Length: 333
Image (cartoon, rainbow, N blue to C red; front, side):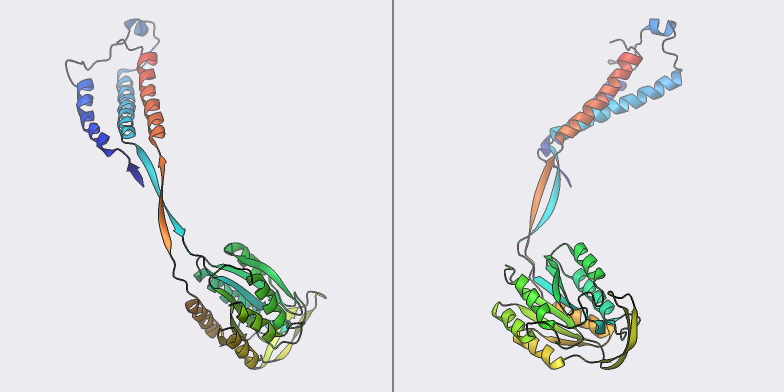
């Protein structure tokens, strides 16, 4: 927004029409341009009268626009920029995502469980503001893919690249939670949250899930658990990244609901069951509403002075008028 530090000077612009009248219409100042006749006789200015008149109008407009800008410059023009400064830090959230082969089950048509989970994580991230969000993937092993960050584009790129069996065939829930707890342990955020998404039971890894949940509880880290997928026989199909072969068949699906409930209860969170795309979306909406932070912001106004720019443009316009009259037309004072 354009503002003026000394707006009182702008009243001087009221006199501008008076000066324009005196220069162009007052008989005492004269309305003709006195040009050296020698120039015309020598043919150095072969300009028709209409073209000359038009050119004079244009350059006169430049002159008065320059005077107008000088008047604005006296008022101290400045560009005011309003900046929003967040006074409180958002939550630190880590998504712990199961990438075991069973996540290839297609009971979220047309998507696999992994695809459906990734889509809902994207939806969840788009709804968060000022939060740092990280990603842990687990299968037989568990790794931190993205540390908690507000660079959501990087997070989403790494999430999209997560694939079935990337981390082995097992389901190391305890290892996935432990990696997340480790990277949240030194966080200074008021709210630290882990969201576990899995469709199986713990069958790999050296750390038991309840031990990891207990560590989280001691550090004040909340855990939400999501059991994804329907029970019973579900078709699956995926490409084995090690052999390149297409694996397909029917999976007898179930997840350890009792374990997931206990993990959430231990770490002051909640357990959710998602058996369809609609219920999975409702789960993430619920978590989003539970993890809210009262946003405190301060509006800071930054000003950029513009008077030098106005003066430069004004002098440039006046110089164009002067050069046209004195050099090209050789106007006589």
